[in-house]
Length: 130
Image 1 (cartoon, rainbow, N blue to C red):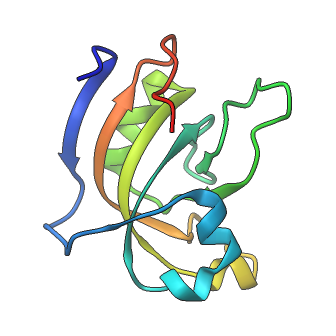
Image 2 (cartoon, rainbow, N blue to C red):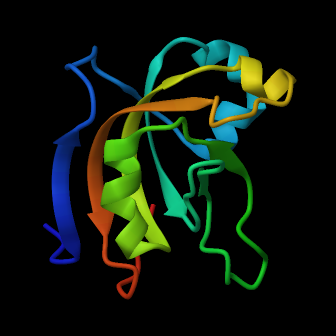
């Protein structure tokens, strides 16, 4: 396994059904297909505050920008875990809510409600290649 893993499988909520592995781009392309499902997604959390927390395709300093993103719902355990490591690469299992893609959501209402933080990669190490 990759030595850069700092953390493995921190449960954020009670155990949920097996997640559908997907990407940020796929979720944004066909949100209705994933609405209400548990998904496994990975990407970069570049900033996470009480008002906003997103997962991006790339780090914010990438030459082409951070790419597409999804918002992460308010979760004090998730926030406390990732905040000291920002920016960082994560893999999460989350319930997907497509409604925030159709309208603006505020106060950390979001597309992704994290159930399990599966891993965090050291931000100084490159993430695994897809």
